[in-house]
Structure formats: structure tokens, C-alpha cells
Length: 282
Image 1 (spheres, helix red, strand yellow):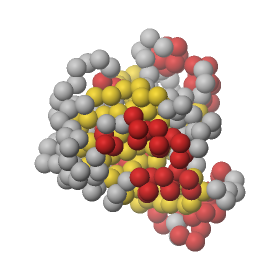
Image 2 (cartoon, one colour):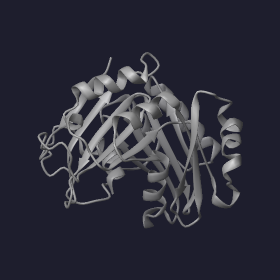
Image 3 (cartoon, rainbow, N blue to C red):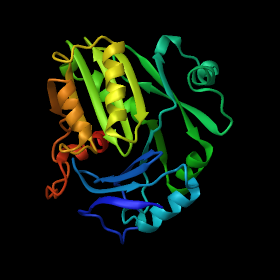
Image 4 (cartoon, rainbow, N blue to C red):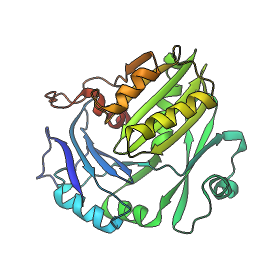
């Protein structure tokens, strides 16, 4: 079953069959986020977040239910930016990449698969990286058959560009934690160099603590000196956040990478809920 968890509507004109606004969609195994970036303006004023379990539903049914419940998808868009939030991905140095070996990298890390197609993104950072990833055929077909003028990327690619191109991570140890429904995306950077980008599924707060303890031990992180940046669907009163506070001492919430986003935001939800999604639009 697909459930609409959050909806914020601004200047959306459902009467217009085509428009020059930009549709931004994030697709994961447990959520779809939809945003409209208005033409000629700097802000996103329309947002929908849907939750589901793709292990229990076919992608055809998921997309049909989202289209039925979405006001954003009542209109068409000539510019659709799609970000896949999927964990079967491998980030490698650009000088080690060639298209013929892309599938071999994925097979070595994630095993063989005949149900996926292979895609890759160039990550626009100084050190030169390529993100190779898999998308289920049915998911890919549903995206391309339901939307117009699709430009696909993986969420890792955008997150790494936003993070590695920031002066904030040039020195010291930086740990980025982005929370989604039963999913946490982790990025670890030491002195401006990428050491880890990976997603972990979890069911309980204890799962989150286990992953973070393993990362701290594996990379010999100082829990008092490591800068930890948090964003996404996490309640500050939750057990997950309580564990993070007890484990690390330098904690902050992620700032948005653009101004004037959600001008009509009423504060019903904490701003950090939206940061991972809105940063895809800049």
C-alpha cells in the first residue's frame, strides 16, 4: 500500500497541461519524493513524499497509486530530473572506469543479476569519480513510461558533489548521515577525501547503532572529534538520535544548499526532514 506521508502545495497550477517548471523525483525502495522547481524562481514550493514497501508490491502498482494520489503528477513536465536512491552502487576513480567493466564492478560487490540495468554517472568533483549503479528493469520502465524528458542520476552522485565541493569538509573527519524510511545513507570524508558512501537498511534503532559502531571501529574514528551532520526523516526525540548523541560529540543538522526554498513552509515538520530532498534541486 502506498501512503502519502507529507504534502506541501504552493503555486502549482494543475490546469496547465505542459509547463516550463522542473519536476524532481527521488525514487527508492521504500519512498518516492516529488518536487516542483518553479521556472524562473529559486525555490521549491511543492513537495510530496510517499512511503511503501517495494518488496510487497510491483512497481507498476506503486506508480499507479502514486499517480492517483499525487497532485504534482496531475500535470506534465518537459523537464523531469530523476534520482535513484538505491544501494546497489559502486563509486570508483574515473581513471579506473570503462563502460565494458561497469557490470563487472557491480557483480563483484553486489552479486550477479539479470533483473537490472546498469547505469553510471560522472561525479563532478576535483578527484574525478564515477558512480556505477543498478536499477530494476520494471522501475526503470515505469519512470520512463510515466514521465517526459527524463534525466536520470543516482542520489550518491549529487550528494557527493554537494559534499566534496564544500569547503567544510577540506579538513578533519566528516560523517554525513541522511535518514529515510528504514534507510540511512552514510558518507565519510577524511581531509577532503572520500572513504565511504553506502546505504544501510534498518528496522530498529539498535540496527543504526550497530552500523555506526562498525564504521567508527573500521575507520578508527574519534567519537569526540568527528564532525557528524544529520538530515532527513529522523525525530530528535527518537532512540536513533539518542544513540547518535551518546556516540558522537560534534553533531549538527545539515543546512540547505540554496536560498528561498519552501517559501510557504509553515513549520509543521522540522526543516531537516526536507534537506536531503531539496538539495537535489540545486
